[in-house]
Amino acid sequence: MSDPKKTTFSPASASGAPSETDASTLGYEAALAELETIIARIERGDGALDESLRQYRRGATLVKRCRDVLDQARAEVERIAVSDLAERAESASKQPDA
Image (cartoon, rainbow, N blue to C red; front, side):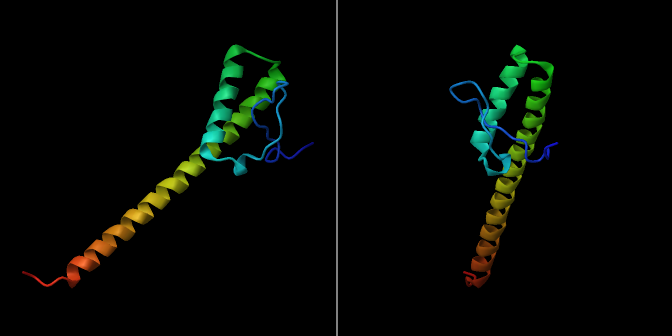
């Protein structure tokens, strides 16, 4: 039995068969695009139940990846904002009062 954390695929190739890709290496846009493809397949009812379940699991992995990327971006923006505020406060405290 394979490790569920390592069972991944990317959008279908020209032949329609999925190719293997580790979700943790995908950027936000790539993960979202693959997720949209999976949602469309499931909504159309393409494939057997087992395949739909496999795609659903992959979709859940991609949702987590997208959330992780967004969380990292949010943390970076907050870090930059705090740093900027600290620099402004420091700069304002060094200026003599008029």
